[in-house]
Length: 326
Image (cartoon, rainbow, N blue to C red; front, side, top):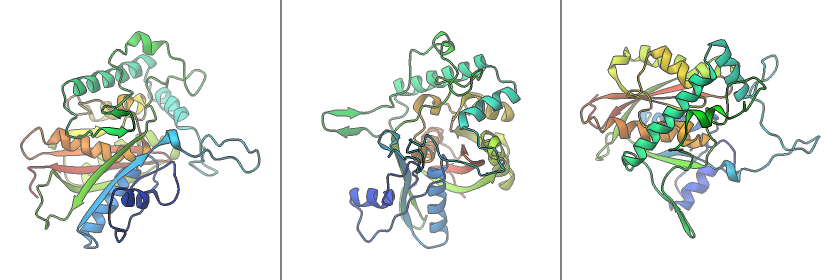
């Protein structure tokens, strides 16, 4: 399982035991920041491909609201974030990098706000149209049930977004409205060898993981997706749907413009700007959303899930739907 905020004690193992798995079933937790959930799935697939396992439950979980507060050993003050890059690399905050990227590639604040608003609109339409019921499971606790993501804003507007102040740098363009909210969440995917007699919802076909300068990490999905298409000798016309983790509007706009994608192919049901980004769970959420979209096509087709990774990486995964045949 993927997990970033580190609740301690090999969280995947604790989750497995809590879920009722046999104590004889091993489990391990992976921290690759935003890529944790995808890398957990990729690692699981490799276990199956190599014959080390035939079926694996993978995914990720994150509860930033319950994360432990870590104090600096010298100042005894809370550490707001851990370093992502050592010297001589510059270790900018991710929001600062978003501002730098928007300035470098000339992405105005209004364009970022409009993209964010559109993400909320698509998410609202997907929820109201009951398009997410195949992938979302309610969370129940004593006295309440949560059956839908809480940060989707059906009544958001350009006027409301324009009133928000810069979140990271004085004259920056990244705000709380065009940056992804940090949510609690969990995702789970069952991976199996095709030798098992299951009705498969989709097929894992392969992945690419790339690395680049830490200050360019928002370009990770572009580089990883380019490499993935080259690896499998594919063109964008061969891809039915793409799910991109919307860390920041500027990053998503760069990706959309680079590949010349419309709103139907890219994040048709909205993205993390609306639904939020529970770090370790996001990879599994992207795969679930992608399969949900692909299987509504009802013919063999391919999709890509992709995200950027703090510290300077990008991951893209190629998925075939229920009707896909190798």
